[in-house]
Length: 84
Image 1 (spheres, one colour):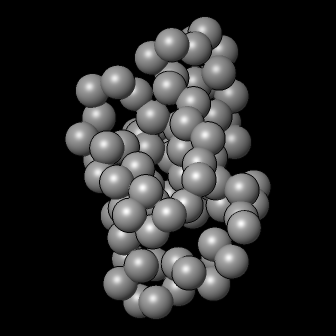
Image 2: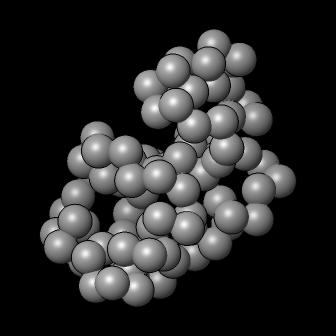
């Protein structure tokens, strides 16, 4: 199974939806809540992805994007192969 990492914050509805989608699919994921991390973690993440918003989702260390991109992959039938 793929390694999935989600960077989130405590009050992010899109983070909740992304985690719900993965949970429904039976996918284990590691969540890194940026609300509980040092500011440097968020800065490093923004430099790595060029994105400022959360969630930021990685599958096997490949940046997927946020919830919209994750859901688009699911809708197009491309998410399951990435997670296999």
